[in-house]
Image (cartoon, rainbow, N blue to C red):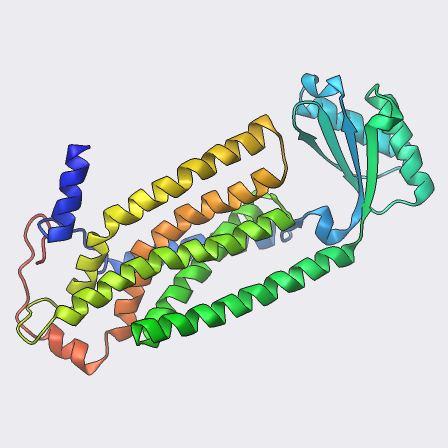
Length: 336
C-alpha cells in the first residue's frame, strides 16, 4: 500500500511519469481493434440478440420445480420438448431464474396454444398448472423503449457537448470526450453482440448509465489538463503534450481508485444476479455497468486526453510552445 501511495505522490509531483500521450498512436490502434472486433463479430453473428421486450412473444415461468437441480441443460431440454409437443419446430429460449424457477420464451402464440403450452410445461416439470404463469409482450412496447432510448442518447450527447464546450471554453475537449464516449458505448454493446448476450431494457438502462460515468472520468482528467496548460507561461519548458501527459499521470491513481470503488459493488451485484438469483434484471444492468466502467477508465486515460492533444497539435500557439527548449526526460519518465 505504501508503494502505491508513493507511486501516486511521484506521479502527481512529476518525479515519475508514464508516457500516455507520446504513445498515443499505439492506444489508437488498440481502441480501433476493440471497435472493429465489437462491430465485426456482432455482424458475423447476425446482429444483437434482443430480449422478448423488443421482439415480442409469449413468456412462461415455471416455479417450484426440482428439475433445476439436474442442471441447466436438463431443465432446458425438458422445456424445449414440452413446447414442441404443442408447437412443432419451435425454438424457445430457456433460462434458469433463481434456484427453482424456469423462464421459457417463445414466439407469439395463440390463446389456445398458450393454454396447451402451460399444461405441457406443468406436466413436464411435475408441478401444478397454477405454478406456471404466462404472459404476452407486444413488439411495439420494445419499439417505444428503443425510440425513447435513442432520443435520450441524442439529447444527452447534445447537452453534454454544449456544457463541456462552455465549461472548458473549447469544443475540442468536448469532441475528444464524445469520441471516448462512443468508444465505450460501442465496446460495451459489442461484448453483448460478440458473446450473443440478450439485450433487455435493463441492459439498455445500463448502457445509458455508463455514459455518465465515462464523461465523469474524462472531465476529471480534462479539468487537470486545463489547470496545467493554463499555468504554462512563456517561461515554461513543458510542451503542450507534456503538460497534458502530466495531468493524466496526476489523475491516474484517482481514476484507478474511482474505478475500483465502482467496479467492486457492480461485480458483487453481477455475481448475485448471475449465480445466486439467475438471469434477470440485476444481471443485465450489472453486466453493462461492469464492462462500461472498465472500458470508460481505459478511454479516459489512453484515448480522450491523447486525442485532445492530437486535435490541438496544429494550432500556432501549441506549435510555438513545442519549439521551446524541452525538458529532458529522465529514466523514470519524469517531466516537471
